[in-house]
Length: 92
Image 1: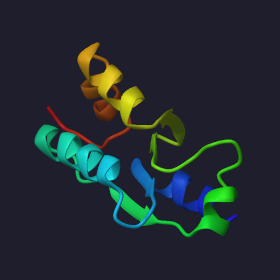
Image 2: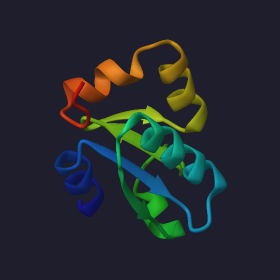
Image 3: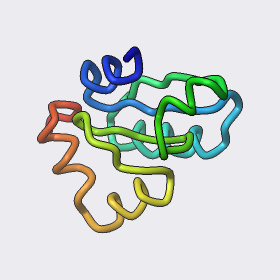
């Protein structure tokens, strides 16, 4: 329930494992664009609460984008910035 609340309350949120290098890359990519996501480090039990999802996982506007590959693909396709604007995480 805590995880669902966090997802719904934050326009961009990353669920990470402690010392996750992929999470660092996600944060850097979003920071370069001008977005500073909420980052939550989860223990193994909490990661299980993400259901079939593993960490790191990024959610934008309450919808799971996926992991690092999905976030980069969204960016390279030109769809990331419009989506961030749509959820109010970025103003252009």
